[in-house]
Image (cartoon, rainbow, N blue to C red):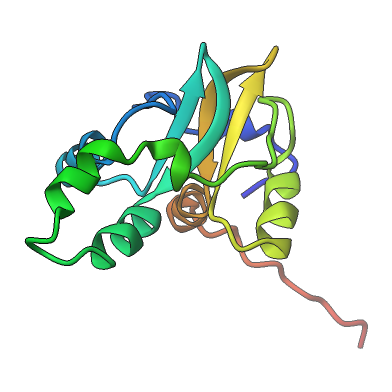
Length: 146
């Protein structure tokens, strides 16, 4: 993988998003029907946070069945559990910039923005998949002077 390639070469652009006022039942349904792990939260096309499958699992895991759990999913908004203050990338940023950010932080997804609008997302899984799909390079022959 060329770590100096632009992030736009590996980012996902076919995104499902929610707004900050969406309730957690909506978010749970999205995660139940898709395989991705990060859901961008946008307000008028601007990224305001990300909610992860782990965020939802922690919230749902803390609910006790029968004690208003279903109602709590209806009344709790995504903005109450989403991660805010995210780092952001631009499409022309290099993959090595994302690697550096991921290596220094605990999150696994970064929004990609252009002119303050969300245009994609890149995850640690995108980078791993790119590495796994890369064909091995030709071995280098080493010649020694005799």
